[in-house]
Image 1 (cartoon, rainbow, N blue to C red):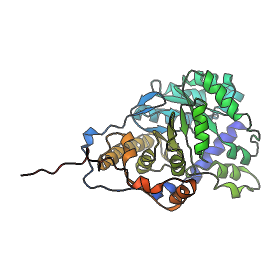
Image 2 (cartoon, rainbow, N blue to C red; image 1 turned 60 degrees about the vertical axis):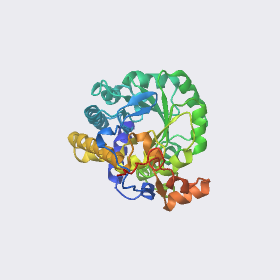
Image 3 (cartoon, rainbow, N blue to C red; image 1 turned 135 degrees about the horizontal axis):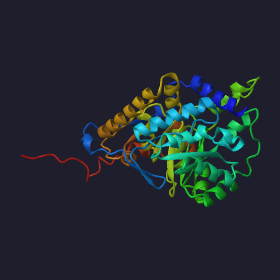
Image 4 (spheres, rainbow, N blue to C red; image 1 turned 45 degrees about the horizontal axis):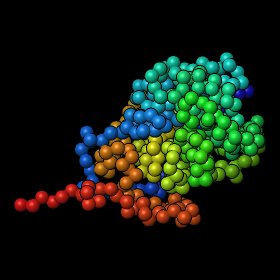
Length: 362
């Protein structure tokens, strides 16, 4: 049954995926026509989860636990290896229930022996299970995913969430790798991220609304499909990043609804240290092949470097000094949460006296 559910998730996710509008469209860079720099001076490197990554882009957790999903993981691992970007597994709960599916996850490390690989467990996992997940993948970090809304809609899902904070604290304090806590598409609030920081978590992946919708996926699996009213639950990824601005002491990752290199740049400009993509990459892999996904990732990285060049940002971190216009639902969210949206339009590093190019005089 678990294997069938994993295959269902992939099928529904691919069918659901559309390049439609989301809140990233309400985030616009202000163009300064003389801000550009030489492309050769741009680096995509970032410091994240205690490591240096050559890129702020990673393949976020998707799947595993069945023959079909194991093959998808093999191809994802090859794409990560060929492009040099980090990679996360999907939920490893199926492995805990049935050790025979271990290879559907282990392939992530087998095909990508030198890459940065993240294991993935849910918040009900025991410390022993978390350690087993890390050992199976020789993981560099551990993701703990939060999916209460998905579980509620899932016909066979959990209904007990009160132990999650204690489990996160216990695992974080007792595993040998950094812990990343991520939402699966409904967003992390400022209060939640602040709590995660106090619990010692290294990274909060805001996992906001706008990408793969697991409430819709689980509702599609229900015979009555009677949870349609909950499909719009949660905060979008841009709103989560704005809400969490200023929470120091942990890194922020942005996932959920990133459709292009421009969305990656927008997320970095809103405060993310790195960005995770799942749905767009999964669709490309399933509808085309591994070579197409490798080509897409390489194109994204090239185009991201181009965007930084035009904006005058030597590193992804410099995007946090670019001017942004926040409009639409994003501006409304800022108003209601007490966030100064106008300040984002007047923060340009380039226009500071030390950075402004000087006129030459005869």
